[in-house]
Image (cartoon, one colour):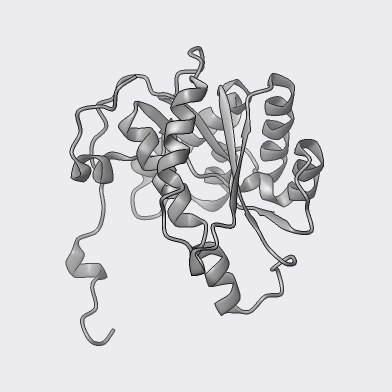
Length: 215
């Protein structure tokens, strides 16, 4: 399918974390995913080493197994809201986010494509220095975000999730990922969206986040 008629600014301001508006019944064409990957591969990366790999899971049994690991790593979002208190500053918005997260929690196994972005390393980085970890994440996050922007421009929805990483070793075993030399960084559902009319999200003003010359 051709890209949506969106400007670069529209893509940047309307690429949302999509959970409830993922079309669980419509397959995602492999060629469409590959277009997004080609754009993702143009992202900058530390020393231009391009250490990323993208594991795309479409097999129903493997999707179900990954969804189970995700659920093991994340208590029910609604239960978490009750336990932790609903988004203290905005209870209504917090409840809405929890409802959206709960929907994905319940339906993740039905999403047609689950993407696990990975980065090749020389060893597990749990004990790496702050600088080393920053380099690792900085070498994969731009590519993943570029994939998500490309997906948005083609009518696909995505959401960055990490709960399955509590069981990364089990996921590696399931997918044949070399656990000792490849880090999984996220689990991203990918599906056509129900409608394409996404809007910019509520955010704090630039005057509250910009610090010029000093904090």
